[in-house]
Length: 417
Image (cartoon, rainbow, N blue to C red; front, side, top):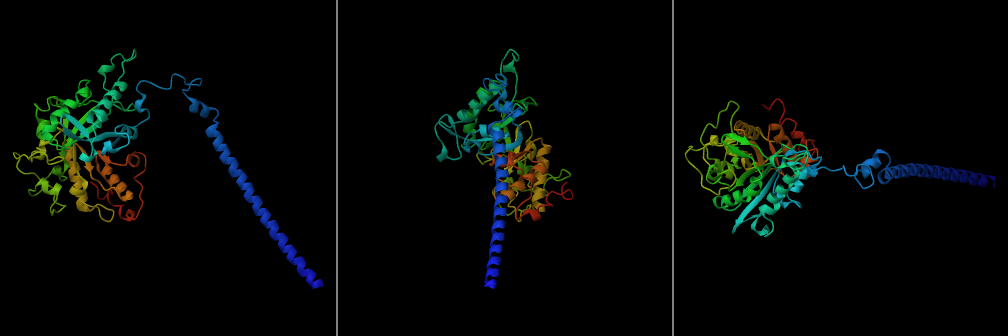
């Protein structure tokens, strides 16, 4: 009897201890939960019921609050936006063409232009064209309106029509590049592009050449695609000298001592494909030879002499990265590829031109970011991007992914010159 009672008492004590532990644990969790709930409610209180400086900032400029009537100014269209050297590739594809790029800080946008009748339509392909999406409606007219706001005529600023502030209020001297990709016949399209730019030209908004001097203005127009170099350099077709050329970057390779390629090689072979040793950069054919028109970026109506390109007629020097540099294996540019990149950048910069590679790798994201990082560190002037947020807001210099183990020596001080 006593033995059974003792056993019963022991079981009861164990059960009581378990219940006490459970209650203590539950009480601890409830206490921590109350603290967490209090922390969350405190944060929400700051957000939805700010006090002091938070209330002032939250209500700034509203009727009846501090800042009423002083929260805006005539040129605040792009307030707080810092320009960055990126090019909005196929900008017309974006939900809000032009404005999305400006919001991100890009200083270059691209419009693919097709001539039908006497109108310039914007789109990537014939199937994407619509009657209301034109060069005027998507780019020229909005830019005219933006620049009128950035150059107001007020009693404090009576000469607004004589100033040349650009789209970025933070850096008003920064020019925005409008890269026009000629999709139809370049020679036929060129005079229509010239005419379409007149609203900007008549207000003095276009960068132009005045003799041997380049006069920079809020908008710099560059022709690419089937744009004929002969039309850009002709005073009859480009009378105002305010359309510049997108020169062939692949033709500009130079060695560290200024030497060019050791043997003749057709630029067309490098750009359009053949069995080419990547360690041998391209040279040109005799200077008097001129390519035919409508051959694509940097190829239409161009001379074979790379020294024909300068700031007097060109602005960008561009090339397809995948065609001119090749595929990137194992997450690392090879020594031959780095030699090509450095030589092309060296040659373009000697001519005063801004380097842009298009058709960059876009996936995996880490590989794309790595290529961006390498190109910028090597001196590329304009980063060609589709992902505006990734290029301008994210930290794409971080190493991550399966290729990171190969990356550390791509542009080391030992290998970079």
